Length: 400
Image (tube, rainbow, N blue to C red):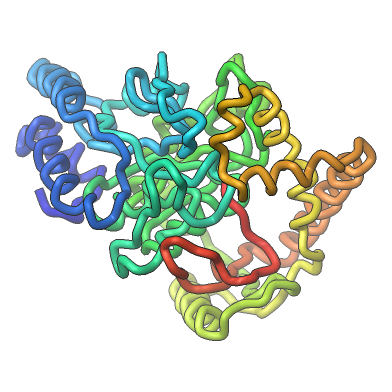
């Protein structure tokens, strides 16, 4: 098995009996042992559990029972529950927490045949855009160990970029899939709210702002992941229907004909590093040329939405802190506490105004897409910074 094999190729090799799930797991664990000490991408590994899962997959293959992710080793971000594994949220306050059951997403990925080999690092409660915490330390970028892979899904992105796993879970409330995918040279997609249900015992801290999704080595892998994990759930009021098999089929179909494609280096308000803007512009031109579209520099015309985002998202972290014991509160990082505590001053009318701002932004984008088929922008406005932070002063960008 090649170090950079796509997940769909690994699953195909196992289905064809050219590779066993046990061999895939053993190779993954060997890579983890070799590469993780320098990266700190995984904060927990379960070799015996992974081998038990692999044995079950190999038994199923022997009976001609196959699944779309059958035998593919994956990592799971430590904001998400895996039965019997640590579920610390990257926080000393939950250092001894062990999940009793799989999250809905993890259960669906396992049902599709994925093998969970361990948990990946995240900043405390995913609150910032680089992956570092006081419990496990900083995660480092495989391309340059002095740099961050981004956050808050930085452990997952580093694991995929380093070739430890081909696929890992992630989540994104303010850039937490998109930032690490960009910094680490992976593929990532933040799905629409409700596309992959949460359905946990408590409401999501950041509400519908934070959605679940993959970090992957190929677009096709991400599509297969979505086919496995998407779909409604009765305990998630925002969950959406998902026709079976629609995402991978779309990737394999001929690309649609595009007319006008908009390109914006800054969305009209951001401060973008000139080098980032130059490279992103070249990529936009190449994409438009490849599909025969007209490329037009244009911005939708909305103001920086960061204040409205914070007003709607941060009060959930206040609720989280208020539910902790005094001992747990004493273990929290000062940065996370500051991020949350500023939200105590938010009033009901502030939330109403933020919801109105979101509504108007949606109307602006709807009108914009009457004239353009796509909007292309840089994913991040800067290059990867130091692994321990701090990030450069930017007008926007958080975790999730």
